[in-house]
Image (cartoon, rainbow, N blue to C red; front, side, top):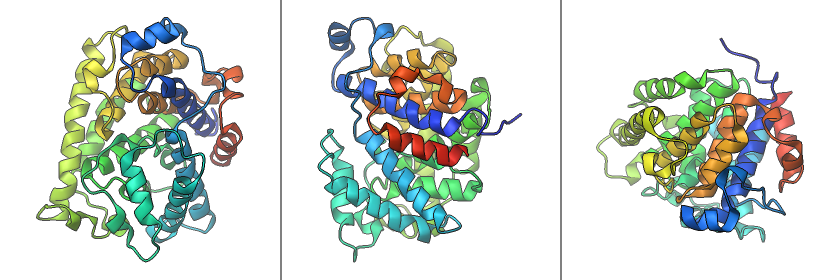
Length: 340
């Protein structure tokens, strides 16, 4: 059974949860678990920082959200309507004085190249990068109502490809948006990983040429189907590890030990999902667990917050926390657009 995404204000829940996870994980990124515990105390009591400052994860999520709003305001979501505003928003982020939150090198290199309007975006894409910057920002694609599966997959992969062109980055972004949509529509968390595996298998050799153009030719694969299959295969492997971790990993243990540190796209997806699935009915505990990890803590916790918000909606988050988050008005405005 599925439920109306509006009923629980899932879009607001996703965007708020992503930002809260980001703000919790931003101060702990690059620290190991003992250092985090020494600094913040027991992980189950980790406070939201004051002020609740976010990283480039939330900034770029807003960039994707604003681009989607612009594209859909103009009519049907198509590659030709989405690529220009995505490019504009990414360059705006790159040039902003607020772009001082330890952004990833891949995003910086690609966005610098995207400033040249005469350059095809495929020539700016970093074809060898599958960093988590591809999918830590993709959640808005899972929230836009009325999209076909082709539109949602194409948009998810395109927003990745502008910076992170590796096929695993594309596939992980697609899976992340799909997971957000499934949870927002009422999918049961207990069957989520199986649904994601089925989706990956169904799409393993599907190259979205209208959205990606000739991106695949920048790699060394013999055909576009072979190019994209490499990415789906790596995602299928990590989903297998996630299924095992669901059965065996203790919530008290550092989640990165089970599904990876999250610096790369498929691991960020899996570890973010693991933290969510270990605390399905305790969203604040879930993002605290994700933030108290030795890997890319802000991205893992941001994804955890997005999944929890999709499942439980806006009421998942304490009002006192939601009211303090940086960029709160932008997040609420976008959420209201897609919840209405």
